[in-house]
Image (tube, rainbow, N blue to C red; front, side):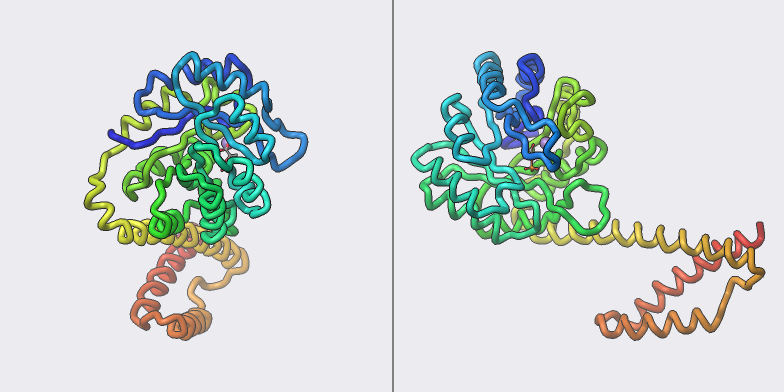
Amino acid sequence: MNYPLIIAGPCSVESEEQILATARALKEIPEVKLLRGGVWKPRTRPDAFEGRGEEGLVWLAEAKRETGLPIATEVATSEHVELALKYDVDALWIGARTVVNPFSIQQLADAMEGADIPVFIKNPVSPDLNLWIGAFERFQKAGLTRLAAIHRGFSYYKESPYRNFPMWEIPIELKRILDVPVVTDISHICGCRELLQDTAQKSVDLAFDGLMVECHCCPDEALTDAHQQITPSALSTLLGSLSPRSKQVLNDDQVLSALRSEIDDIDAELLQLLARRMNVSSQIGEYKKEKGLTVVQMERWKQILSDHLETGKELGLSKELVEKVFEAIHQASIQRQASILSK
Ligand code: PEP
Ligand code: MN
């Protein structure tokens, strides 16, 4: 498939052998246009592996010399920028934890002033579109013109199958306002290998401009983000399984696609909630069996329905919808309890 930009490489540069082996394999995948590798790693806890620093840049530059792949790394301070430029890094990215801090962003923008280097700006950890836009504005004011966004998902207060909840509507809104390319970092969105394929397809369906994928020659042994990294050969399979979409139609329909995607996320949450509710019903069934109580407690059911109708009305939901949904749920719940009592 003709994907405009695939960025791939390990979460962290760990050793000369690791980055060279990974880069050599990635070089064989024609869609891969940029080799990523973190040498300064922002870690939640202080004793975790924090990257190889300048030594890692030496190895990354070696991988570039050997494979011809341009290289990219994350910078978070002006010293990082200085060193990355010294080692001829071709593109820089700003991490999600840095984008939340306007002081850091200003310092980075100042350090890059006059450097004609592409900069990828990740979304801030929190779902704050203005903070993301503000980072673009600071780099633009410093004269940087080759800017792109990386969508890596957002911290979310609810449980979700993703490491970082995608909230696709936010990068779409960024693209609408700033008209910048947006690359989807499926690895940090998913946090696991199982969800990568579907998330990559969604990025294609929503007409985004590329993918960032963490690839490691031996993912299980990775020092950072082992669960989400894949081998270059798995990346090749993933890219080969993507179904192309016509951008013409999708661009026109990007708003519709984003809304549908929001609906899909909500439906997934509804299903999780239904499963939880049925689970509680089973526990009630067990309890009623133990205490010799009847399954249907008519007064309780009437009360529930009238409370829900009242709340539904306040929320602008029709009586018909609330009745239908809760009758179906109640019925399924009764059936489940009845089958427990009859065991
Ligand atoms: C990374 O790309 O390895 C990284 C640390 O990402 P993020 O800033 O999105 O967490
Ligand atoms: Mn990572």
